[in-house]
Image 1 (cartoon, helix red, strand yellow):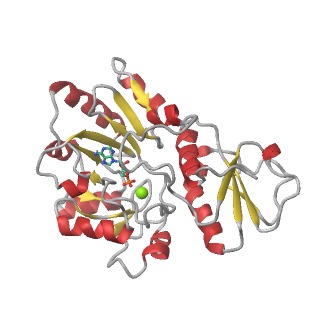
Image 2 (image 1 turned 180 degrees about the vertical axis):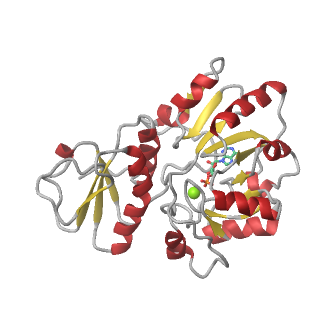
Length: 312
Ligand code: AMP
Ligand code: MG
């Protein structure tokens, strides 16, 4: 079953049912080394899945109180009975308390821990509406719960709390700047910020450098001045905002009116998908925000989507 979350649509299965979990990997063509996030209704349920000492319990409680239910995923030492298939054989499990009312209701009614990676083929753009799920996975699912468009539009922030040094593994709507003040005694390392200026060793399985990619080659730019003056045909240009009145040709697209990054995040995957499926373009040039605040998550997804493609 596919169902909405506040971030992107998920492909859901009972996290303790190994057969169902295997189907998720098969439908997504997801490699088994890429572990799944397990979703729960509340802190009490989360605590059933993990082994925490007193200090870690205090850290988790602080973060859950501030950010959950919501788009923050916690990587924590797992209980041994959680299937290895879910965690790719690691000693940790990623857990999130999603906020979306439909997802909450499915968890309450099924009384299951629900594993739910994004409902799309591995490596492609994540779905932010029910129609996106149908577009990629039609015929492979029995049910899609339609909760409308996802209000956030980029995947959850992931924080690894299982090591002595806390580490942000994936940027999202909830930023390091928001989390750090709540944990003044523990420095949070930001993997993506560190990796921003060049490839480094991957800190966790399933954070590949190429991901979220349209089939149409995607190239990034920061400022309009970086774009070629004479635009070739069959190139779509995507801007963060509509501020510049000189833009607005038939192949120019805008992610927001005024550059509001929450709006940009909400629209980004849908627009890339529309351009990709239009088959009108040989290339997409997309403006990339500064890696600050929510811009960090958007820039991270765009950089992976455009991996190693500089504007020619
Ligand atoms: P998603 O594909 O959005 O459901 O996110 C799943 C991602 O969470 C994986 O690709 C990993 O990057 C991360 N993740 C899940 N479980 C773990 C874990 N035990 N340790 C580290 N990262 C994890
Ligand atoms: Mg995914």
